[in-house]
Length: 191
Image 1 (cartoon, one colour):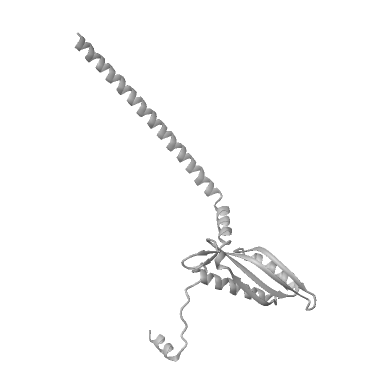
Image 2: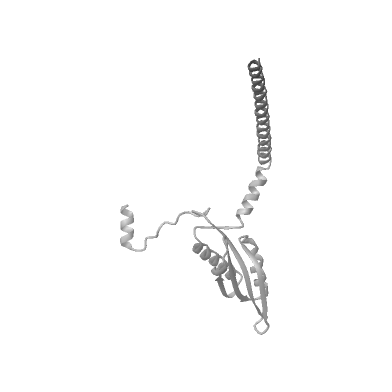
């Protein structure tokens, strides 16, 4: 009798163990389904938000991209910025324009630059105001001294040039080499 009783208790124990395992498995599945349902609802809310605000998000993305000058290399970026600053200074009749980049204090995507120039007060203020159009150049510090004898000011502006390295900057086409000799021109016509 004891062996029949043991067998029955063993069967009852197995049934209860199976019931407990199935209950635990069911609870885990319910939690998994609830988590996935919540993730899907969150994704749908994000997709709806992006659809409703697509224009504003695109505008914000463009304004963020304007904070960095896209360049092919750091050296080309420095040359480009120097060229733009010299042209801007020339447009405002500033003299003795010097632009120095401080490569030793460079961080990941920013290079400190110092621009020194002299000229009349009005054009100097115009130059500083025009710098605000270049969002990738942020003014850190400015020193302006007056030379009463020549009726000019001398200014020193410390800038941070923010850049982003890209394969080919947008809006620029690949420059084709120019033929400078007559033999090269005849060879180019033959191609």
